[in-house]
Image (cartoon, rainbow, N blue to C red; front, side):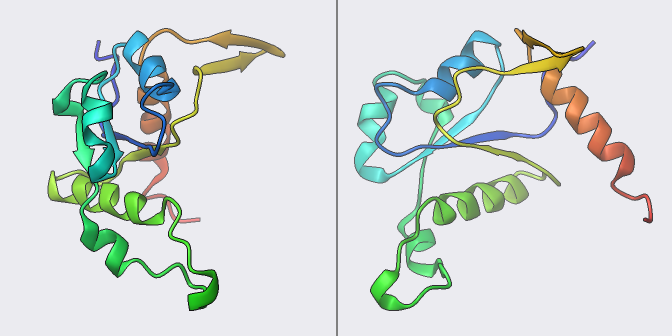
Length: 139
């Protein structure tokens, strides 16, 4: 049985190469992922994460991002990185993808009011199967 997700996971990260909580959580579960980082932080992240997992956010995504605010209050936040992850997913033939923040310490589920930490990627697969089952259902 496949235990990992079928859609790619992207972690959006900035300035957290030292902590990389989400990355560590996914690594402990043997779940594949990509982490999207700023060009100037690439070396910091590749010092602690496999280079194959680290994607540099192209400047064009910052330049083309519209935060829907006036120039005085313009702040892109994670929007540019999220748009890049979306396009990267599409370019690699995926119809869906996951986007996560970089400060998640672990993953779990609740059953009968009790929290259970999960130790494998099956949690993502279960969510995907549920969503895929209903994606073409007319409401």
